Image (cartoon, rainbow, N blue to C red; front, side):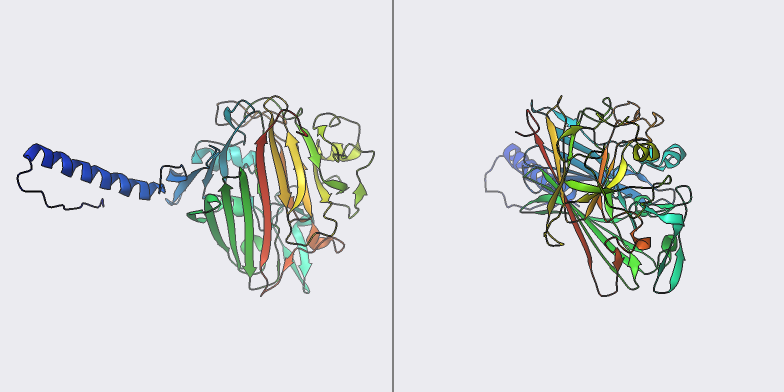
Length: 409
C-alpha cells in the first residue's frame, strides 16, 4: 500500500492550492513506494524486478534487471539462474546484447530447447562438464548418474541446476548491484550423495565487471563443480559467427579427450597444435584443421589447464581474453578455478531463434566455462572436486567488459 502522509493546512490557504499540495504529496509517496518495489533507491539506475512467466506447476519466475553507472545492463531470471541478456557498449558507445538467449520463459521450457539443450546462460551443477559412463566411486560406494550425453553424464543430469527454480534476493552495495541465488539439492538428487546447500551471487559493478561467486556446503561427501554457461557473441547476439573473434587463453596445456569427449588423463602441451591460444588468435583460424581432437568435438570443446603458477587457490588469475575487431568489444575472464572449457558453439544448428528474431547458426556463440577438469571424480591425477562435510566450496570468476581499438590497447 502507498504511504499517505497527512499534513495540516495553514489557515486561509486557498482550496485549490490545498488540493494541489495534497496531490503532489500523494504522488511523491506513490513514486517512493513504486521505487522501493522496483528496487530503485535513487536516480542512478540499479535494479528492477518483473514477472517473466510461470512454471508448469504455477510458480512465478522473476526477471531481475540491473544497470551499472556506465549503462551496462544485466538481466537474470531465477529459473536456472539464467543470464538472459547482457548489454555492453562498442567503441562508438553503442550498446548491444552480447549473450545468446530468449525473451520468454516458454522458450526455455520448450521441447525444442530441451532437445537442443545448449544451456544458454545457466548455472551448471552439481557437476559442470562430463562424468564418464554416468558413475563414480566414493568412499567405497558407487553412484549412478543420468547418462544424458551418450553414455556419459553432462552438466548435472536430466534436471541439473539449470532447470530448477532458485530463491532470489537482489541487493545493492558499494561495488554495484546484483542477485543472490540459493538452491538446496537434496540427498540423492540426480544420483548425487549429500544434501547440498548452494549459493551463487551475481554482482554487476560500476567497474564494468560481472562477478560470479559460488558457495556450497554438504552433509555427505559429494563431487561439486559449478560453472556459468553463457554464450557470447561480441558483435551482438544473432550476428554472424564468432570465428573472427580473437582469443587468448592463459594455458600451456589442455586435457585431450576420447571420442565421447571424456579426458584421457593426459595433460598435453598446446605448443604446435590448434589449441595454442597463448597469443591472440582468431577462433576460426585453425578450427577446420585436420586434427583428431578437433574432429572429436566438431571444433573446440576442450578443457584448458590454466597457468596458475604459485597463485593461492582463492586468488583470481587471468584465464582468457576475447576481442572482436568489428565492435572493439572485449571480455576478460579471471578465475580461482584451475581450468576453463572453451566451446566454439559447434552444436548450434539454426534450430533456435534468439531475442532479435535471428536463428542461432553454427558457431554463432562461444562459451568460456571456468571449472575443475571434466571427469575428475574418476581421474585421481586431476585436482579433486570432492566436497566434504564441514568444508565450504568456494569459487569466483570475474568477467570484465571493455571496448578498444585493438586487442592489446
